[in-house]
Length: 214
View 1 (cartoon, one colour):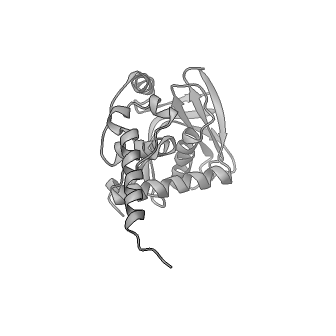
View 2: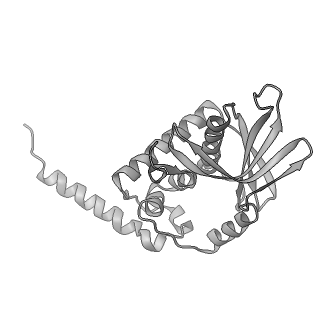
View 3: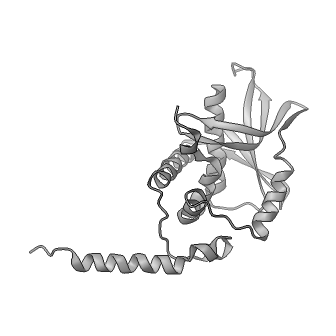
């Protein structure tokens, strides 16, 4: 088995889908800056990040569950995993991952990919299908059901492969500045307007020295 240091963290997938440069700065360069939004998210997670379990009507709930998937070389922790009674499962229970998010529901795929990756880990760990889970949005105090269909599973596995590529190359890709940069706590370290400009300049110089074919 490969050392866990070469595995992709589940949290890296959410960062990758938001911005590949952000993901590389955090997981390759090990940079982190906390702002108001990340601090609020951290405080929200502290309420569920203490390992433990409890029984509720019709289900068993485990908190801060360690996860891993040998096939995809994924590792991390689920905020909550509910185990629902299921007579078709060999264990009599079927896992149902729940990821806690501070913000309201979003149309982007990042949170759903992170949750789907948790399901892939649970499937390998328990040997059962995990067809769905939920995102809990603290701002709304509501759950959003997520079904792990073929499209989402493919998107998730592609994201894992891309994150492995960035880690293997120790690569921090350049990206153009975008409106979402204003929401990123790493903006002052990222400097997208500078790095993207350097990339355009290097591309221009490379084209100038490339041999011309007649």
